[in-house]
Length: 337
Image 1 (cartoon, rainbow, N blue to C red):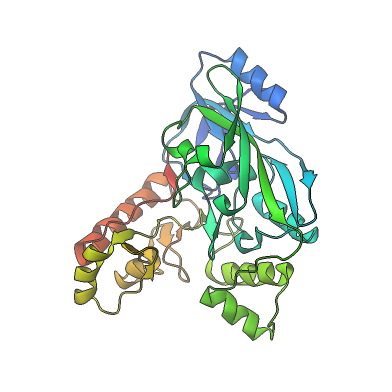
Image 2: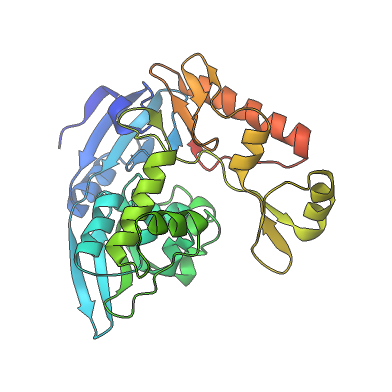
């Protein structure tokens, strides 16, 4: 393992932001990770996964440890279920496609989400009616402080909407090294309840979709709305969809009866942040090399040489404008560094 100085992170963040790491090392095994942590105990550290959910606004004055652990395997099977373990450095989308190729169900609605497997529990990523918590069993993690391994069960992860214990109570204390999912082998619970998926399947005359067909539909939808980070720097959805108390929402809805929303409980509703941003006039706008994607207002993009600060300024302008118009605060989903 070679620690490199003044290392460019441009190719290791999906926004394609030019930022430098004071020091950088990629680790390919749990043993490598343990060694690096022990040998650099006093060093300030920054843990880097797939770089898909962060906005770099400055150089990182720390030792950047890139988690590049690879491997996936079946660890247990029953007649109807399979328990699959993936190492943290595996590409999430490639892992999802692998499970579908094995006819294992549960992850197909989350096809084409950027990033690596190890960071998925941190955000409790989700799409089209499914979230990580629906199939998650546990994850292994190493403490940065003393290199002890700990297993986090589903309950211990305290999953919420784009939330987990790793973003709150134990933030910056652990490095996830592997994740175990419980997937279906038979009687797959195909979820096509979202209108976009239903429409895409109907367009292809599919009435009884397979896992692969649901995945293909999700991929087609995402590709039609979201830019490929390899071609146009972005981090997927930049903002969370705000969740409001029904009592508060009803007052706003009276003023804006055309506002879209989804009931998520007896007392709460979710409002699409993309709709709010589009109504505020930002969809497709460009400010130098920073902008808002023309097909999806939730996605902020780097047209080439935008700095992280420029993209952050655009995001703040959006938040302020949406709040001034609707009285709703939209929160960034992306981690700002």
